[in-house]
Image (cartoon, rainbow over all chains, first blue to last red; front, top):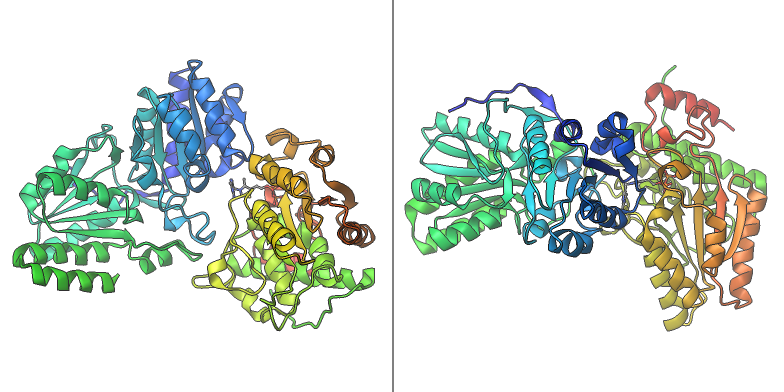
Amino acid sequence: MQEFSLLGKKPTRHGFGEGLVVLGERNPNVVALGGDITGSVMTSYFKEKFPDRFFSIGIAEQNATTIAVGMALSGKVPFFASYGAFCAFRNADQIRISMCYNEANVKIGGGHAGISVGPDGATHQVLEEVAFLRTLPHMTLVVPCDFLEAKKATIAIGEMVGPAYIRFGRVDVPMFTTEETPFQLGKAEVFHPGNDVAIIACGSMVWPALEAAKELSKIGVSARVINNHTIKPFDYETTVKAAQECGAIVTAEEHQVHGGLGSIVAEAVAKNYPVPMEFVGVKDSFGGSGDPTELMEKFGLTWKEIYASALMAMKRRDKGAVALRKVNEVESYSQA
Amino acid sequence: MELTIEFREKAFENKPQSTENLQEIANEIRRDIIQSLVLAKSGHSGGPLGSADIFASLYFGGYMRYKKNEPWWEGRDRFVLSAGHMAPVLYATLANAGMFPKEELRTLRQFGTRLQGHPGRDMGLPGIETSSGSLGQGISIAVGMAMADKLLDNTDKRVYSLTGDGELQEGSVWEAAMSAYHFKLDNFCWIIDNNDCQIDGRIPEVMDVYPIVEKCQAFGFDTIVCDGHNFDEINAAFDKFLANQKNKTGKPTAIVAKTYMGRGVSFMEDNFKWHGNPPNVEQAITALQELVL
Ligand SMILES: Cc1ncc(C[n+]2csc(CCOP(=O)(O)OP(=O)(O)O)c2C)c(N)n1
């Protein structure tokens, strides 16, 4: 298994921008639509390279989404990108009916995901879109963990047929995957071996999950880290296997704990092989202004939180007693 | 040169006043915008500087009725910043109006601040009537307030809302306009900050939403075009709104204010690249020098 180390830092949005250019080179039907923030969500790369296949739609996310549907129904492969706050929710109805019900081959790039958007504050820190998008029939939903994976994921959704959404962030985040790291839509990857506890993470929380696993190994706990980049279609097999072999699970995501990756894992586990679970994520609150690193700490999105949650999940598994479980849950919530 | 930050407590009044006084107030607002942004190290310079004159007239020319010591006074007029990213000008205006200590402008965009990057109502900052930041929503909220004030509560309270011109590309803006006309909201005043700039470029290049004036007219607004940096014209526009309400015209008012993004700071003026950036220390020093009155 690949050993991951820190290779540098870059925002995942750059991976999206570069991936889109690769697609543009490979397929003349790929087009891009801009929503007045092309320089932040990096559709600007595509715009420079293929000006004839780029269309500025202005600040009109609903219109952009449905224009994209019209183009898709005319054989094009349109990518529309904006901030996730506006291109997953302002246009939610358009995504549901025109894009998904039509099975239109539209791709949406949702930037500025999560609390790490920083000083712009709650309005721009989208923390709920995974909960919405993963419930839509026909949708493919990817949350890549670093720059290179974002690039691979962008290319992958551009080369499959059907509605898709890719979630990426604003700030520099660790780069650690390489060209050799396997990436396949719909297939979660084990990034660190272990059988004592499983940490299932996506996006910006995969690196902290690896850090937590490293720290856990120092106290003799072997944690399996799973990079669950594709939220939909969900890789049930990898999750259920983790439940069976590890018996305790922590999920980690830069998203509300309600409705995101944690909820999906919980559904999978409850149906197939129930084990104690802990959830690292934002706990039913809006974000706020602040420095990105500071915010990640204040909202409990760190390797330390994953580490503590892993121990908690294991403790609950090992003690088993219902009464104790209740006590522990109260503790873990008051910690958060 | 060193950067000296000084938030000067002022006792500006809110009443019909001379162009010179309003100019002084607008200048102070601009200085505070620059100071709070350089400290925040992020945030929007262009729109806030460009609309400072409108804010000076609105809050200090006797058009908005408010009590600085009783910010949530029942009888107040309300202002909704639909273009939420322009928060720095609203914060600077409210601070100069005495709604909160000017020193608080230091906290812009920092963790736990009441001065969120985009207005957050949950923070309870006096003068912030609603959260905003997703373009095209504030104006509808303002229409709802005007409906409640006029149609349900039978008051003569006024509601003002400012949108950007790029913001006009959001279809929901025009849904709001349609309702303001339909419900005969002569207590509603829509201000459009027409600086012809948005993030990706000039308005006609990104998505041509012109002609704005004719659109507002077609939507049933008494539409007034003014030079957004000329106090005589800005005041005349607000006076017309007051007259419309007083005369029960049953027509909402739209003020299309022709402005320059970044007004008052030479190197920012009329340049869309300044939509969303703060000045660095050197730039702030230069800007504050230019804003000495
Ligand atoms: C619904 C929505 N889409 C996109 C954005 C991102 N955004 C913030 S400001 C802005 C440009 C606004 O242009 P304009 O209204 O002309 O304001 P100005 O540039 O003059 O400050 C955009 C696209 C947003 N805040 N809300």
